[in-house]
Length: 69
Image (cartoon, rainbow, N blue to C red):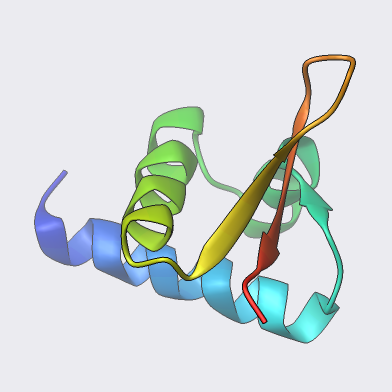
């Protein structure tokens, strides 16, 4: 995967979060955006590096994500 594709996927993730205006779980991202694990995690890493998202780790070990406000 090239940098441009990762950036494009990061944009899709950001846009989905912006529309939802709530925490979104990893399974919800995968279902709604139809991304592979690899594509999704690379996009989340991109957004995390840019301080665009906040990753929440639940007590059960699952993750959800929301936009920094």
